[in-house]
Length: 239
Image (cartoon, rainbow, N blue to C red):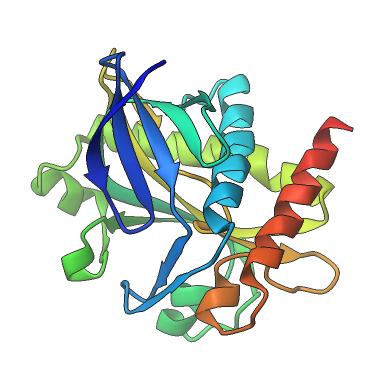
């Protein structure tokens, strides 16, 4: 696989073309952002950990029959991915109350939910990624009803796999977000971005300590150490 020209330079990732028209290379940066990019920092080593953690989790989903863009690791900081057409939507999966759900609904953080909550967000930085429903998404031409049903089904199946996996590591998967795209080779709807402590809330089951980006959002310190702990525990799955 040959790495070619830079085709996207984002805040936290770069995307490079390759000699395969249906594959790209994702390069993870050490930059971290919060609160609609208002809060920003460079955390040495974070990009490498995001790359490795996401490779483990997306690889696991691939093996369990949930198609993602991940193909294989390319380097410590890079991974080969299937090329996609971005669907500008996020599906947020909530197993417990935290973050914006707590703030918006006045429910204490950590509250257990009677059922899993699935939220749909319009992935638009200028608008602050607002909550929308499926009718908004179709009216805006972002996806069809059939595509939305498939996205929500994938989100449900991914949660059914990831939640018990993290429980084996003494970690609560409080919530996570996933993004989707249409694969350039066959048009399939696939998970098209990372699953990592950047996009998930992961709490130690005994201490309730966050091991994710909330350490940065809440000025708890030792951000990279939290990511390292998640990675270390994931490695035990192969022991």
